[in-house]
Image (cartoon, rainbow, N blue to C red):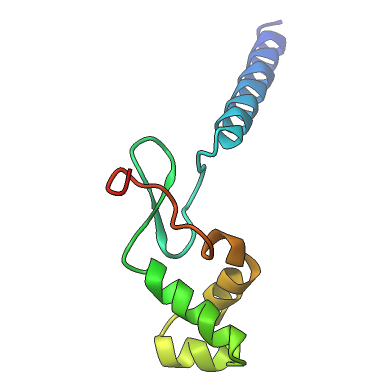
Length: 103
């Protein structure tokens, strides 16, 4: 009987955690390891770090026809990271994400 209650409690806890993560994502907060070029600020939002400009340069070079492999070699950034930057370009282009410094 105790095992049944423990299992029920674990399921409820798991559901609460999942719902909490979903609610924070709806507010624009980041959960997990931040992408290349970003840190997670104290409130949970992505803030650009020193690598942000490198990501923007990589996107610019890709637009000019550079290969991902060549960019990885030249920049010292892993090819998989260059691919992730290319696949998530909306994160890097457009307006600079809001930070406490430029509010």
